[in-house]
Image 1: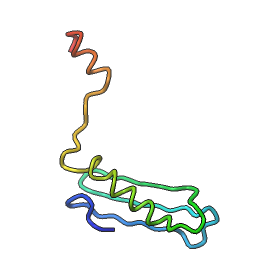
Image 2: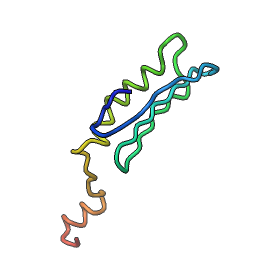
Image 3: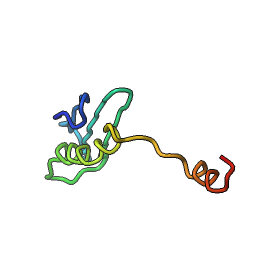
Image 4: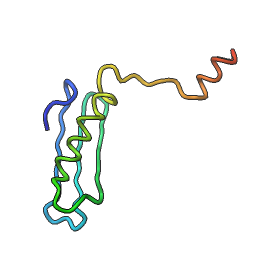
Length: 84
């Protein structure tokens, strides 16, 4: 798998003996890990390429340098009411 997020490493595959056409993509970067799993893929499609494409779409947002956690809805509400 290409380096989707700087410093990350990953792989994707579809088992050759699969009856449900499942496919998996796995990406690790820093202290984070992201897994995309398709349990029932479409017959005749390259389902491994599909999970790799999904990984390319979501990984930069979840594992990238700009991916900082946001406050929980409870914490945001406490800030608005002056409790935080």
